[in-house]
Amino acid sequence: MPDDVLHLRNDEISVELSRFGGSLIAATWRGIPFLKPTATAGVATQRFGADGSFPLVPFGNRIEGNSFTFDGERFFLEPNTSRDPFCLHGDGWLGEWELTSRSGEQATLSYVHAERAGNPYAYEAVQDVRLDGSTVVVSLRVTNMSARRLPFGLGHHPFFPRTAGTRLRARAKRIWGERTGHLPDAPGPISRTLDFTEGNTFPAHWMNNAYDGWDGEAVIEWPELQLALRLKTQGPFGCFMIYSPGADADFFCFEPMTHLPNAHNMPKEAGGLVALKRGQSLAGTVTFHLAPIG
Image 1 (tube, rainbow, N blue to C red):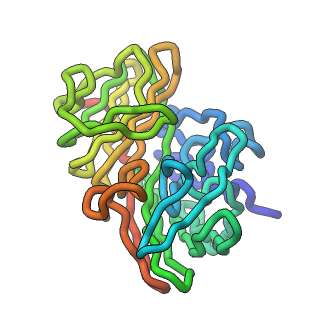
Image 2 (cartoon, helix red, strand yellow):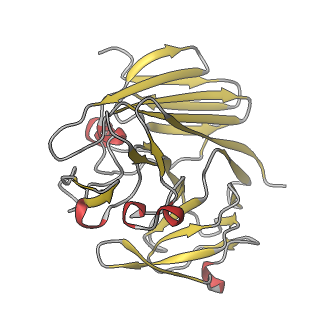
């Protein structure tokens, strides 16, 4: 099919967007990469060898036991990759999206997922990617097409370059530990080494933690590149994940999410998922603004 990879460009930014997984394959600002394409279990990696960022829909991360109870009914999901025992990151990153509109600096993709055995979700997702000067604007909307009410969430999973001096600034109220299966453990106060409120480098050790009570903004700085990325959200993005395999890795992930991992098995008011009736939608926007440091 034509337009498997869409090239969006202006004088500042170049983005490669694939309809496979709705993924950003690569992105540069004034020729400097600000995404780090990385091999994943996603369909874009299967086609092109790597993903730079992909949408999380109709939820992100993992659901304990691949099951949850909602409105008194028990639902079960099947694992969706060979690399993980869980149904991981929803369906969007594993599906083929359709191109619905495009220009030199904008493209809109849609993805329809039908309910089937091993997955109760039926929905339509629409993702719009637009360049505006030195800013990439990514909007994502999901609409419940099931006859039943179901809990939905959204997110994005970008891979960023990690250099020795990379610093992150992001304000949150608490952190969730990690337990077996890469599931969230109990929440608690944020230790100094994992506190990015005033800006901090990443620890040398493995890190795979959720934060909540987020104000929806973050700044990443690469002193070696004299480059800063300011991330802002619109919509109910109250959480983020940080995945950093360690000091030897050349990437890290900062994942804006509307809900916590395993929110399907948390009290409704705690997890952040939104219950949608048939025809109702959940939407949010993430912007990435690039500029020289300072």
